[in-house]
Length: 568
Ligand SMILES: [Zn+2]
Image 1: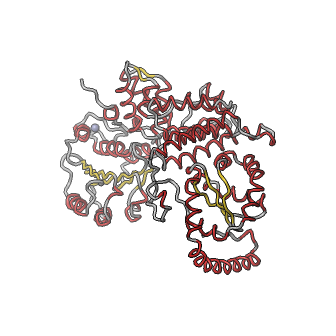
Image 2: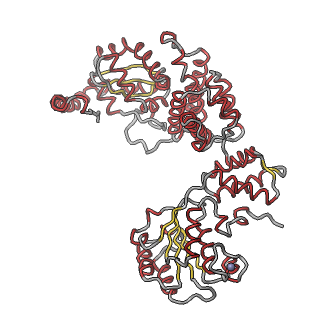
Image 3: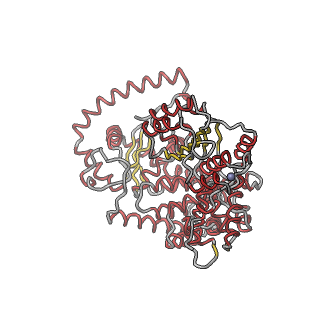
């Protein structure tokens, strides 16, 4: 016999098979028993949580020849006919493809005819939020004066898109995401019944990956069965079809990072990627896994707090070693990496940098402030990665940009795409106001500022390590970066960095990042254009002096703390 997909074979036929929605199924059963059936229902909830299955079971139960029944008998002509689709009084409409006013007018014209073979005509309109405004109006007319023998069941994943006039005419039931244990229990029941063997962890992992949807769980299970090479579902099969990273590997990696064994962590990452795992998936899984440890540790071992992690022995061994600070910083580093990954063609390097940054996290705390230089090994690894990144760029690997670069770039770089847009206007403006005193003041205090930054935030420090103060005015500072990618990365910590810098130099400067390779041509262009620039900026300077006066007046009035001055 040909293999039939589990989610088809095991589609619930009775209310008791609808997993995790007992608050709904019980209410519906009571209504049927007490003959208090409404004319319109709205079933809302995430996909795969049993909305249309419950609607069909309801249609069978109210039409079952043995009624009143709590469950459809599944044997009578009505039950069987509805089951196999031969009863024309059950009408299923997919609003995603029949959303026009004519589709609903046709329904309106037909509802007045009595059912042909059962007692109730049941209309199930799936994805009802897709109906057009005209169609909703037509539907509303029908719902306002429903014929006795007609029942509407509207199903949707997006109830907020349904007009209130419709909602107010329906009895509403909100289907919940199905609890993971309930999904696991149901899968085990099905697999036992089918005589399929499985590893416990494999099934738990399917439950995690399904994120509360029974249909997703069963179709993942189908894929894992198809993928497995023997007659058993292994954890590896599940990881292969879900693309996710095994918990054991994440735990080993956390151990390595905590113990400053970056080489091992990098090797492990390499193996994962070689095995075909996606770098973004790795970062995604890692973030959620760390989040689970954080929740578990702070919620006194509450297992319900776990979304992805399985609390086995290795989990407990590792999670007891990490403190909340470490976890929070690690999550924040990975979050930043996740953002950056959207704009790069070399995601692996970003993940590697993230791992190196994570290894550095609590070194800050353990070490005495004086001895805070990164280990030579780490510096070597960073240098290697940065060389690799540079080589990639020289090969012309495009760094996609969010929008086309409109600002005119220096000629030397005009045909190179970049992930960072140098703010040429601000740069020129700063240069026109720049003084030697300003920049040497910054340079004098730079080393101690960097020391301070390292203690405050290792990730921010790592981004500034290869930067050089180039020019400064009384209000802004041009910093050039050896690696262009740091120009955009540093902007994420801009506020913190500027605040800290102001503590060291005694005034607030807006940082303007520029890639090293652009700096020379920017400077040259500026010097060449000097005569015209001066004329232009005179006006600007005057205008800004006026603004400054206004700002300082305002400060006197409202107090400095309340006034946020932004560089436009
Ligand atoms: Zn029946």
